[in-house]
Figure 1 (tube, rainbow, N blue to C red):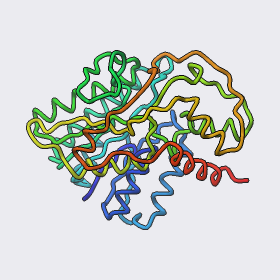
Figure 2 (figure 1 turned 90 degrees about the horizontal axis):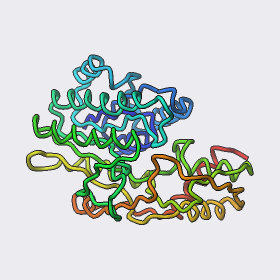
Figure 3 (figure 1 turned 180 degrees about the horizontal axis):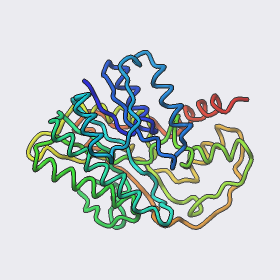
Figure 4 (figure 1 turned 60 degrees about the horizontal axis):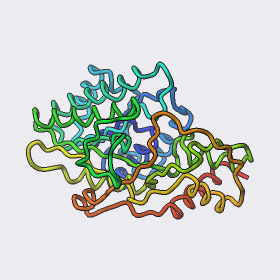
Length: 324
C-alpha cells in the first residue's frame, strides 16, 4: 500500500513507519517539525528511517496538516491508499495560554485529514486517540463503551473531540476509520519529556528526580513495538458496518505504579534515584488501565512485552545513545 503517515518524525509514527517499510509498503511521511518538541531528535528519527533497507519507498514532506490547501495537494500528488494520522500536540500538562495550539493541531488538523481522506476515498484512516479521554468517573479496567465525557485536560478534550468528528465523517461519507486509545507508550526513540527518559537521565547523572503524587499513580505502560504492531494489525482490518467507525484500547491491561516502574529502572541501571515527592499535577489521572480484549478480538493481537523486558530494551538503547 501507499500509506500517508502524519507526524512521521514523532515517537510512535517513527516506529510505525519503520514497520510499514519493512513489510514493503510505501510511506509518505508528513511532519511540521514543531519546535515545541525536540527538533534534533525528530531529525534523528527521520535520518534513521532514511537509512533503513526499505528507505527507497520513504518520502518526506515538511508541512503542517492544518494547512488545508497544501494537504489537499499532497493527497492529489501522492494518492495514498490508507492514512495513519499520528500528528498531534501532545501532553496532558498544557502550559497556560497554549490551549489554542492544542485545538489547532489536534482538532483543526484532524478535520483537514478527515476532509482529504474522505475526498480521496482511502480504504482506511487510523488515528491516535488517548487513554486520557476516559478522564474522571471511568471504572477500571477502562472499556471502550465507557462514557468518556469528563476529560481532565485540554489535550484529553481534543482527543475526545477527534473521536466524535471521526464518527460523524464515517457516518456522512462512508469513511472507514479507527481510533486507537494509546496507553502510556514508552521505548527507544521516545520523548525526552516523558517519565522513562527523565528517570533514566536522573539515574545516570545522579540528579534529583521529582516524583509526582509520591509515585503512587498507576500507568498501563505499553512498549512501542507492541503499539506499532497494533497499528498495523488495525490498519489491515478496516471496520465493517455503518458507520464503519470504532475506537480500540491499545494497552497491556496491567497497571504499574510509578514507584514500581522506577524500581525496575534502578535495578537495571545499578543506581538509586534521589527522589523528591511533589504534588500530583493538574490534568493527570490517578490511574490508567486498559481492557485490551476488543483489540484482541478484532485483530488477534494484544500488547505482550512486559515492563521488565521493555525497560531492559530501553536501557540498552539509552546507554548506546548516551555513550560511555
